[in-house]
Length: 291
Length: 329
Image 1: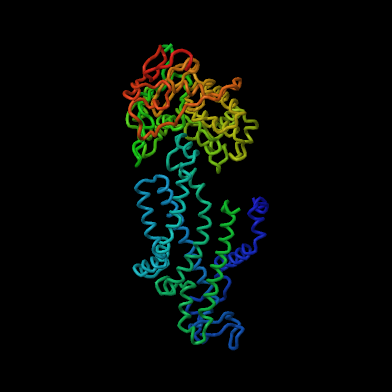
Image 2 (image 1 turned 90 degrees about the vertical axis):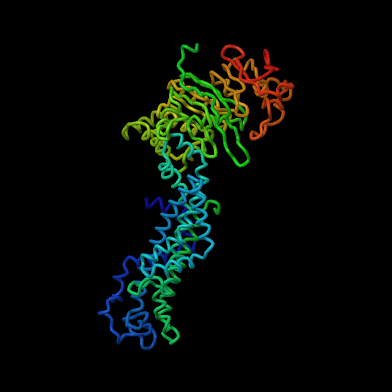
């Protein structure tokens, strides 16, 4: 299995593609942070008992007044910025990935149904999608969040409500063209039921473009979530994502205490950058027309 | 002769229409025929003549905006035009199977052929996994695929066109259907293997005691294979009868034209005959005979009244006011 992967064209192209390697390295680092985060830092940034107000606003370790215990400095409550970032990254990635999965599942299902059965239902679903696409997704998410209030679950709902459309459209288009193929006719002639035809014969044939969309969407979702949290309508203060960390430091940014928000910002940037690099590579690899 | 054979399928005044924005397309308009057990019937006509729609109507697979307007499809006494969708799921594949035109697209590219064969057996038989596998292997050997056991795990793209059509035939025959609808089964293949595949289909049909409707535009194919011929033009039967008689002595000018346009390699002096004009727009068919604009024998009556399908002699009928008599035009 593993040797087959290393011998594949996919792997060979990956090795020759610098930005793909860079993207992968970034993603691996973030994967380690997400999985092993709590063991990487010595301080639990949300255990108030472990914080010491005497440590507040310490600059990064390499600056005068820096403390080696806090490599990227501390915030106003004496919290290690690096530890907060690592915890925040986990929340950001968790939201981005789960919202992507929810959108993917719902959007794919809707797209399959619309594309396979066509008719009125298809018209209705696709018009809803069209209307929704005519508004910026940020605006819709912001609107929904101000109605829902803060919370990770609510961010997930808002992002899914914004994100399913892309999948529904992609899958519907693919399904339309796949269901015209003779092998789908052949499956019907063989006596297969619609549900099984969709699952066995159409779904596997429409998934490839979804991989690319899903990858890039994780990045988009992380950014939207960060923006929502920065505006104060995202995650609650007890579960700060990277966006909320930026907001927390933003108040003191112009007092010269730049590290509290700049470092979380750099982490978001690196994360989304890595996702997009890898997503670009996937798009080139998985699109037969670009080869 | 009629009393000896048992009728498997009787199609009675079948009308399948498509209601499009541009008008109603009467793709099949009052088609009747019957098929005895073990018989092969050729369904012949130009493209757009409604041949394939007949096949899909029998299987109950007419999609909106199409609809079976009226008529009966009696399969072993059961009217398929009225059968529930549940009942049709049991009939498709098990009782009636179909062989498609293009083996390049009628197999799912993502599944090994063994899996696609297995799907059919799981649906229509009670065999266990080993029994199904054994049946698949035997079936593949039957259609002339060597090392069948290893080939089960191959994907469609690892087969050549002819081999793929063999697989398609194997899948169609797997559940031992009683009726096979072969929709242009050799049109997409190289001429060199067409004959092989036709022979294979005929052998399989005969060995399993099945009946077949062979849908094709190629009269040469029908002459080889079929016991009976039904010729369609603009959704209507214009002639039918036993193969030899229809080929040697066509009654309808359209059939005569089709036969005259088969190339004869020994005759290099004459230009190849063709039927002038094209199939009329099926949404606005002219009054009277549909074929009259292209017909060398058309007279005033043909524009007036549409000819009925009339018995010319026992077992033969044609829909023409002025049928061709004796040995072609």
